[in-house]
Every structure is written in structure tokens, then in C-alpha cells.
Length: 274
Length: 309
Ligand SMILES: Nc1ncnc2c1ncn2[C@@H]1O[C@H](COP(=O)(O)OP(=O)(O)OP(=O)(O)O)[C@@H](O)[C@H]1O
Ligand SMILES: [Mg+2]
Image (cartoon, rainbow over the protein chains, first blue to last red):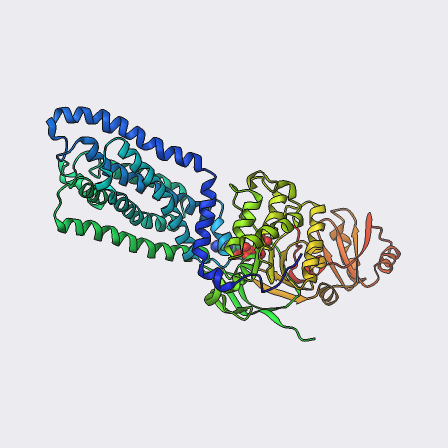
């Protein structure tokens, strides 16, 4: 067996393309659960839309007269929130569990870091592969929304981009937080109970945020889901919001993205080299 | 002979908080040699290895690997290393071949190259039958062999093995030693940590004995024995309570003596002769054993402690 030659590894190429190799490996791993990923992506919107969109919707639409909510049928009002929420949850899942696994459970990141890969490349590779997976979920979800007549595809398709964008911004923070945590049990508990549920319930998901008392509205203001939902409703059915608010939504999300990624790079490099 | 040194360290120090795990050590490793770190638990072997592997950041001191500073050019250095960490960190959810494949990709190797290499490595690690099995179902020794195979996917110039044979059965150990010999013949530089004396004697051209973060001695295995021990050792037992009692009488007979709880080690160049002299004095050990000095004796001399406790 030939060994010990410097000729085999093209150092420059390895260093330049590291992020891509991480993405490739992550996708390869995800392929092992492709079936459960796909069924999850299909069944989740189906159940939500059937129960909330049709069930609750019929009830609400009949009460509110022909106006529905925010001037549209309930299912149309609901759709942007559901799409943004699934994007955020899937993206978040793909940047938290693999990171806990990488640093703590199986220490895979330490194995990866013994190759030319840098901490930043491992962080970015994890992030981009999560993004690709989320693109898949968003496409499927959108198709189901179209099937339920919850969106007009020709008009509402940019909503896929805005949902993905919001998810990408929030996931950057979660990527960093997962890399920063030493206590994985606590992290998962906090994430499940204090983050996912409240954000889902208090972000103007099921009714306009303004129908809540101000202190509860505040949860929505910091929630990426609320910002994403507002933009989504604007894109989908022309929900009216002032231009400054649209700018604020985008700026807020962009700040999360930039801060999140910089924090994540820092944490990855630190954890791997200590 | 001109020796090109691949690794050079001077005053290398690592602090964890205010605990010094490595205390200003100097060493250098030459191209093509097999260099060992021998020491008990907590000596700082793994810490030193991780600094050389360009992953752990040193606190102070100098180190260059392949002429580069790991703090600045880690990825470039790591491109030429094969690392076997003390704890296996394989991807449990993937198959044996997928683990090798993915790792090869991290080095930027082409798919074609990796596929061919995987066949060689499966053979090397005796895992051909397990190629499509998930890692989580492998036995401990098989995982160890896979980790070693994985480190070879990029044909590294320096192979670093942190306690490579821990968890391997005797047969697998000897096979691995044989494979490592062959790698060395092909010019691979080996860095090995171990607390097995026989492994250190078998595998290493040069050894650094470490204890509590410092270097106690450094030489070839035979050089160490020559320097720190006698040619032979006589091990005698008088029964646990009598050992201490007779030891003052024995101490005048030999160069050096170690009284262990269960036996007395007496150092001399001719142990048979020594045993005769003991008998002449009217002392009759329950058991006696004459053997050659080993690294264990060197370690005992250097640290006052036994390596295997
Ligand atoms: N991450 C860490 N944080 C704090 N202390 C550490 C850390 N890693 C190692 N140490 C300490 O540094 C010392 C040296 O550890 P190291 O793992 O290098 O020893 P070793 O020689 O490899 O031992 P062993 O034979 O048990 O593997 C030990 O006292 C250990 O407790
Ligand atoms: Mg160790």
C-alpha cells in the first residue's frame, strides 16, 4: 500500500473547497433518512391545513362574515405563517442537532477538524446543507398550499424566498447558540419549551398580532416568525403594511443573520481549538 | 546521515486554566522515524499530540510542523497528517465505507481515488466483510481499526496514533504493529503514544518518557534501558510481610533495588550470580525470576512509580 507521499492531497483545492465537502457529507447523511424527511414534509402541511385551515377556517369565516381575517379567507391568512414556520423549524433543526452531535455526542466535528477543514468551513457547510434541506421542505409545503388553494402560485411564489430568508437569518443565531452551549440537555429543553412553542403561538400566526395585549405582542416583535409572516402576507395577498415596517422587518432579520454567522464562526473555531 | 526534522518544539506549554498539562517541553521528530510518547495517565501525551495535530492551540512556546506554525497554517499542516485520536470519533450512523469516503472528501480527494483507496484500506483493517455495515454495529476493536484506516485515506506523510492498540485483542495488536512497520518502511513518519511498554519497545525508534507534563528522558528504547537500568533484573518474593524485613540485608548486594508491595526488584548485570549470593547469605526467596531489564524498569527509576498500576 502506497503511503507517505505529499502528492496525493492538493492542499490548495482542499482548503478552497472545504465548505462544499462538508455540504456533500451532510447531504449524504441526510439521504439515509430521506424517506422520513419527505413524509414529514408532506404530512405536516397536510394535517395543519386540514385541521386549522379548513376546520377552524370554516368556523371563523362563518363568524366573521364574508370578510374572513385581514380581508381574506382564513386559510389564505394562515398560509404565510405556516410556510415561514416550517422553514424556520426545519432549518433550526438541521443546524442544532448536528452541531450538538458534532461537538458533544459523537464529536464528529473534531474528526472533521483533523483534516484541512477549518471551524468556519464546518459551520458554513452545516449551515448550507441545512438550507438545501429547507429549500426542499418549502417547495413541498408551497405545493401543498397551492393544492389547498391557500395561495395563488403566480403571485405568492416570492413568499418561498422570504420564508427561506427569515429561516436562514434565525438559523444563523441558532447555529451559534448550539455551538456555544456546553449543556446540551438544558439547551434542548430551552429550545423546545421557551423558543419553538412560544414563537409559534405568539407571532401572529393564527390571528393578527395586534389583537393581543401589548406585552404579549412584544414576543412577536422579537420573533423572526412574526417578521417573516408579515412579509409573507404582504407578498401573498397584499396585506397592507407601511414601507418603513417592511424595511424594519428586513433589517431586523439581516442583523440576526450577520450577528449569528459571526458568532457561529467564533464559537466553532474556539470549541475546536480548546 | 542527514536527518530532516519534520517537527520541532521548544518550550511547548499548554495550560488549562491555571493547570499546566504540558510544561515547556522540547523535542524534535525526524523524517521517517517512529517516535513515541510513553507515560502514565495524565502525563500530557494526548495534549501534546493534539497540539502537533494542529487542532489544540498551545499556550506558549514554539512549535513547527513540516516547517509551519500550526497557529497560523493549521489547514495546510493537517492536509499532510493522518490522525488517530484516543477516542474513536466515527460517524455511527454511516456505513464503514461511507465513513472512509466522506473523510477522503474532506481532504479534497477525487471520488475515483477514494474508491480505489477504500478497497486497500478495508483489506488493511480486515473489515472487508463489514464494508456495508453501520459503524454502530461494529465491535470496539473493529471501530479502532476503522479509525486507523480512516487516518490513512489521504496517504499522510505523518501518521499520529494516540494509544492505537487500546481495546484490540492480542492478535489484532500484533497485526497492527506489523502494518505500522510496513508503513514506516515506506517512509511514513509515525508518532505514537502508549502506556504499553512492549508496544513502545516494538514500534519506536525513539521514545520520550513523560510524566506530569514534563519530559523525564529521551532516547531509543535500548538506550533508555542502558542509561537508566542494569542489563538484568532479579525479582524475588519472600512473602508480602517479609519483603520489607529482608530488604536491608539485600540492598548491599546489588546496584539498585525497588521494594514493591508484592516483590523486590534487584538490579544487576548478572542476576543469576546475584541470586547465588542471596542464597549464600542464607536467604531463601519463595519465588525468584531472572529477566532482562525493560522500559518498565526505566520508568520506575525515573518516576519512582510503576507505569501499570
Ligand atoms: N480540556 C481539558 N480541560 C482541562 N484539563 C484537561 C483537558 N484535557 C486534559 N486535561 C488535563 O491535562 C492533563 C493531561 O491530559 P492528557 O489527556 O494530555 O493526558 P494523557 O497523557 O494523554 O493521559 P492518558 O494516558 O490518560 O490518555 C490531565 O491532568 C488532564 O486532566
Ligand atoms: Mg491520552
